[in-house]
Image 1 (spheres, rainbow, N blue to C red):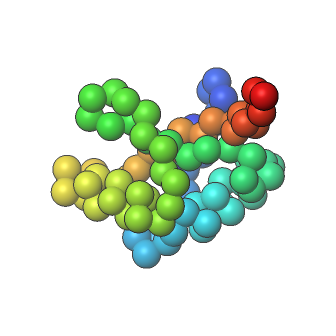
Image 2 (cartoon, one colour):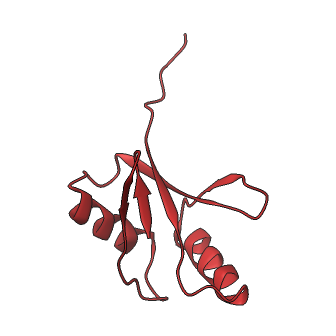
Length: 87
């Protein structure tokens, strides 16, 4: 499942061998977003939003979810904020 903005959620199958690129492509296609314009995060057991920055982060999250008996993962999408130069 992927949640974007208020009230927008999608659900789709993702292979356990998929990486971050595949996840981003699926989300971008379904929500008509441009890949790379948003960050993918998940909420951990303490309620902290954790950035999924690479394939390893996604695999760790998927593995941890399986160990907890979950059959799906939920990711949150946030628009990327451009980094500005404060010189």
